[in-house]
Each structure stands twice: as structure tokens, then as C-alpha cells.
Length: 243
Picture 1: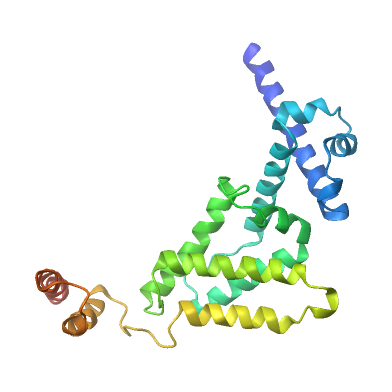
Picture 2: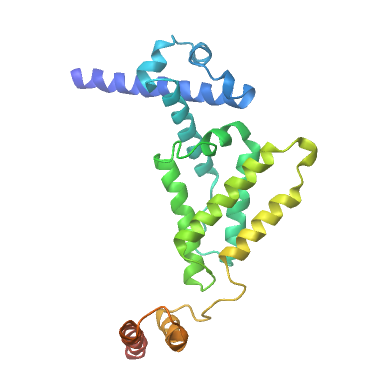
């Protein structure tokens, strides 16, 4: 019986927590961040203000929870196509979706992304980043990625965040959609290649292409070039043996 009582208390606590987060998010969307006070949120949720401190620690803890709620909402809107026809167009669509979410939810987006790392330890944020990393990896395996996968993730994330926050900072009569298009296409140019670096996206084909270019590079020492050359030759040889 005690276990059942404890489970009921935990469930009730989670319901109260979720309601407070939703009330805070609603106040944020309708009236802005200054309206999100512990007293106002408690009143909207029909509880006493001390409940917020018990559940979130303080107002900042409540705002962190609202940011996590925002990441979860954004994640629900994302769609990951495991086999897109065109990985570059898939990247464009994902970038557009992120920007559209920000423009549709300005106060929430500013809370999520206007401060360094708020809510970024949440499961929803990590899941959203995984979707982005999957998109980037598909670009890499198709031979269309211009930079490293880590740098691509930073560029895509930074340009989308910058696009939304810049747009929101502008007076209404200065918000030109061409700005968003230009930023998106600048990101595409920085991250992707017009044509695949390797048309046959197999390890052996990539190895052959890199092997052909190896003598022209100057970054590696002679010993490093030799060792890498052996590895690339082995990848190519293994491909022929498999066939």
C-alpha cells in the first residue's frame, strides 16, 4: 500500500509540474518574459507560490523547465527521413523548419536560444541534435559534405539561431524574407558541395579518390602518407576480394 501511495504522490507531483510549465509557457507567449513571475504562474495554475519553489527550486529553474518544454515541442514538429531523395534539400527543409518554429514562437525561442546552454542538457534537445547529426551524416556518406561533420553541425545551428534572433531584433518594417533565404543559402554553400566528391558512395570509391589525391597534399609527413596509403590500398583491395 505504501508503494501505491508513493506512486500516486509522484504522479500528482509530475502533473502539477507539467501544469506549471504549461502555464508559464502560455504567459511567456502572450505577455513576454517579464510577465513570467512566480506569483503570476502560481495564480494561473491555481496553486500557491511555494509550490514553484518546491518543484523547480526558483524562478530560474522554472524557466529552464519551460525551455525544455520548448525543445520537446520543437522535437515533436521535426521529421527525420532516413532515406531522403536529396540530402541537401533535406537539410534546407530542416533549417527552414527550425527558423519557422522560432518565428512562430518568438518569446519561447528567445528563452531557449538567447542565453548560452539554457535547457541544452534536456533529453529533447539531445534528440533534436541527433536528428541534425543524422542529416549531416547522410550528406557525408553521399559525398556532398564540404566540411567536417562537427563543423557542419555548428554552422547549421549557428545560422538558424542567428537568423531567428536577428529577425526578431528588427523593426517590423525592416523584416525582409530575403534575409532568411540569403542566410540559408550561405549555410548551404559553406556546408555542402555542388556535386558529390565521390560519385560511388562506397568505402572503396572514397579510398580510391583519396589515394589519387594523396601525393598532392603536404599536411602529412612522408611516413604518415605511406601508412595512410597502405590503409587506403587495403580498403580498395578488400572491396575487390568481396566481389
